[in-house]
Image 1 (cartoon, chains in turn orange, blue, green, purple):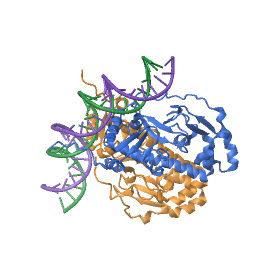
Image 2 (cartoon, rainbow over the protein chains, first blue to last red):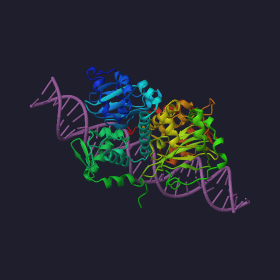
Image 3 (tube, helix red, strand yellow):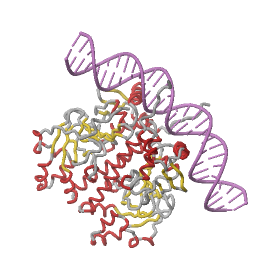
Image 4 (cartoon, chains in turn red, blue, green, orange):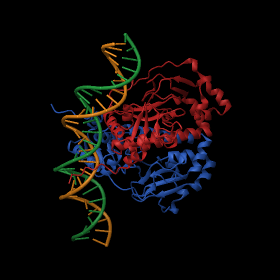
Length: 268
Length: 268
DNA sequence: CGCGCCGCATGACAACAGTCATGCCCTGCG
DNA sequence: CGCAGGGCATGACTGTTGTCATGCGGCGCG
C-alpha cells in the first residue's frame, strides 16, 4: 500500500495554457460537449467559458474534497480518478480515456469532488466547463440533458459493480476481472468505457499501468499485485509487451474469477 | 458468507394490489414524484400509469439483470439493494427508506437493473413509474430534471465512497464507519440518506438489521460481523436495544475508523 | 406443547494477504 | 561513467479473517 496523501490535498493553482483556449478546444472529440454545442446559439455563449488544460505527467486536475466548480472532460490521454480512504489507502475508482466526463456528481450537486483526478500520461488534455453553464443547459432539457444523464448513470452502475467486486474477497479474482474488463470491448469495460481498447481484436491492455496502479485498482498491496502477476506470467496466462499487458489465456482468467470460494478446510 | 442466489434470479410475477392503485399512491410523500406531478397537466397524464406495490417480508421488487422498465420509489418501510458478485457473495449496496428512488441508473440508460431490491419489513410500499413517462419529463427539463439528476449524482457519490471504504482492508474499520454513518444525521448517512435516523438525537440505529445484513453491508462473513459486534458490546462501545443498535461511545468507534493500518510486524 | 427454524454466539484451524527487508534491472542525469 | 531513483521481484513472518462445527435461546406453528 502506498502511504501519504496525493499531492497536498489542497487546490494547487496550475498554469492554464492561455495559448490553447477556446477556439482550439476539441469540442468535436467529446460527445457530450458536441451535444451541448449543437445548439448554435448556445455554442457561442459557451465557448468563452470553456478552458483546455494540458497536463504534465502526474499532474492533479482537481483534488478530492475541493469544491466542484467545473465539469471536466478528457480530451486526450488518460486520467485516473483516485479516492483516499480515511485510513490512508488510495484506491483508483476509474480510468478515463478521451471523451469521458470525469466525476460528474460533484459539480452536479454543487458539493465537492468525490475523488481526485490525476493525469497518467504527459500531454493529457482536459476540458473544463463552469458548472452554471452546464446546469443551465440541463434545466433546458433536450438531447444534451439525456446524454449527461446517461453518463452519470453509467458511472453509477460501474461503481455499483465495483462495490460488489471489491467485496468478493479474493485478490486474485478481483485482479483477473480487472484485467479481463480492461481488455474487453469498450462497452463492457468496467473501470471505464474508454480505457484500454484501441480497436484491435487482440486482448491487450495498452494503457501504461504500473503494478502500483493495478494494486490501487483492486484494493490490494503492491507486493501482492506483483506476486499474482508474476505467477500468471510464469503460467502463461499473461505476458508483458513493453508497458502493455497481453492476455494469452482469457478462459483461464475467467475461470479464476468464477473460482467458488477459498477453502479453509482442514487437510484430511 | 451466504450462498446461493437471491430468489431465482428471474422475474417473479407478483400480485399487484389492485385496490391500492393510482389515487391512493402517496405521491406527496415522495419528493421526486411531487416535483414530477407539480405540473398539473402532467399529473393527470401520469397518474394512470403509476402503480403502488405492497411487499411481504422478504419480497423481491426487481432482480439484478432484469430489464429495467420502471423507476421505483420507496413510499413506506425499507428496501435493501443487493448485488451478487460472480463468485457468489452477496453485498448490500444501500438501504433505502421512504422517499428514496431506488436504482435509477437502470431505467435511465435502458439497460438492466444493477442490483436486486428486496423489502426489509412486511408492509413496505414501493411506487413504480414506467420509464418512458419519467424520461419524457427529463427531456422536458425543469425542476424535476434537476432533482432526478441530484438523486443519481448522490447515489453515485455514495457508491464511490463505498468503493474506497471497501478497499480499506480491515473489517473492523468498515463496520465502525457503517454504524457511525447509519446513526449519523441523514444528510451525512452513507448507505442512504434516509436510513436509520428518526429525528431523535440519540445515536441509535432503529432499522431492523440482522448480523447477516451487517456482514453483507461491509463485505465480510456472518461470523466475523458477530465477533466484532460482540466484542464492542463487551467493551461498552455499543449496546443492543431490542432490534436497534445504540452507540454508547461514538468517539471510540471513530478512533477505530482512523486506526492507521494492521500491523503485521514480527514481535520484538 | 414440543418440534423445527432462525438468529446469535464461540472455538478451532488454516489460508490469505499485508508488512518489512533485500536485491536486481533499467533509465536518466550530473 | 557512476550514481540515484523508480519499477519490479522475492522471501520471511504474522495477523486477520473465512470456513466448519457446535451449541443456545426465542418464536411460530402444527
